[in-house]
Length: 140
Image 1 (cartoon, helix red, strand yellow):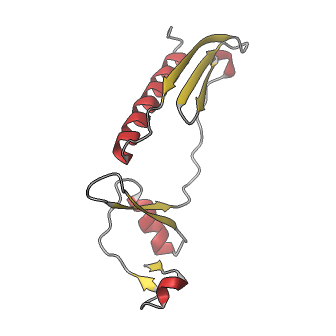
Image 2 (cartoon, rainbow, N blue to C red):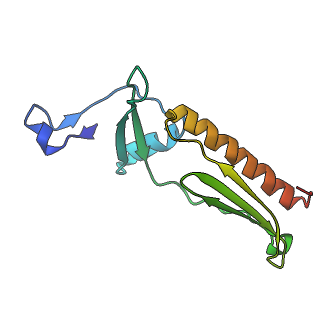
Image 3 (spheres, one colour):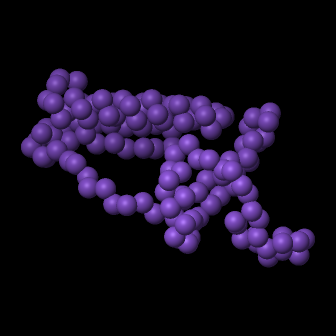
């Protein structure tokens, strides 16, 4: 159930109930939070860039803390810098000396949500591969 803003309450009800929603990611977390009465943040977004004008529901919830696994700095560092129009990566050795750097354009303007997701997923895979190469001391 969702609480309706006061401007819409005058038109009828203060609660909207939507059934049978399934999320591609985080379904169990949402169900658990709803069962416990935990507050969720939500955002409805209409995609005006597609002919269908689909509406999306985004829900934010707290998640359990996950212990981070990091490599010793003696192995060097892979730096990641997201910018509005590009992604920059740099690799340094254990002394902080620059070994390599890369710049990847982020052609996101005018793209659909799915296309943006594909571009960012591809770059995330690249970063993961570079990090693996750094961790295994492969030459990149």
